[in-house]
Image: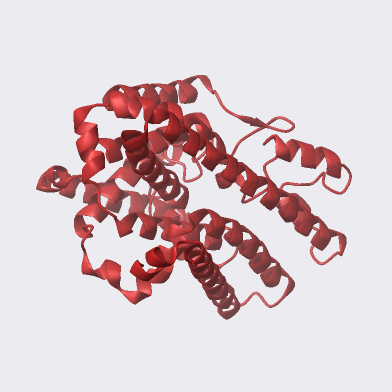
Length: 380
């Protein structure tokens, strides 16, 4: 293992910003998955090129590199790799359980004629005629029901990460360069993962792996330190890019304002180009992360505010809360399309979802503590 990597891993301290980011990503994914919801107009995707998926993938890569990198330092790489594969299994198990219950719930609602159009809306149009085929295709990740795409993406990314971690611990720059090369090749030659019958995944793992490896690279190299933050010109450049991205995104949302955008912008910058992780999307995320870590250092007192602890707790239990959020977004969408879809109802559904996610997160955290020895529970 490279000495500088050892030093960076050993020096890492608990950083609440990671869990805050995961919590924000989970809350954003939940409201983004509810169409015609005024609350999702406030999420990151409406003010720039990147969104909640970018937050989740990058921070998971960062966190896995820290946790399992330190594990490799203390107990060896083989142990760390097996623990990552255990996480892969948990992700897959969560996906399978979620997939089966999710499509069953959608099919039940549609069959009861409460909202039959959601069958095609949620991309499972064959579930009533060919339920076994849909189930088998789902088990081998060949079906992609709406809103499960991000969890599906995390399975191959995490399965690939032991190899990435091996390289990051020994040659981090070479590993990042190889990841970037794969990203560019996938975009250039159209390499992608396919879903039944002739579709492609919403998120192409061959491209999105770069963002996860980039998170791991920042973790093991300590490149997110104060040296870059001290460059005032870089902060100005990052801020200018974020303002430009926000202006373009907001103007694209308005048919009137979009006419003022140059054709080159309209033709090259697409707000929906998330499948292959557009370069301007990556740059937007890096600029946002750079300024956010500058403005909110790891010891910022605001991270102790009680109002943020709910979000942080949802980040600590991100996988379970993501799964809960998928069901809550479906329930929220069903409530809005079968009832009075008023603004006050949209806000109420969103707030109720946040409350349920928070309660579940605190319960899971409490339940885990009950399995710890009494001495550890008292220290906590």
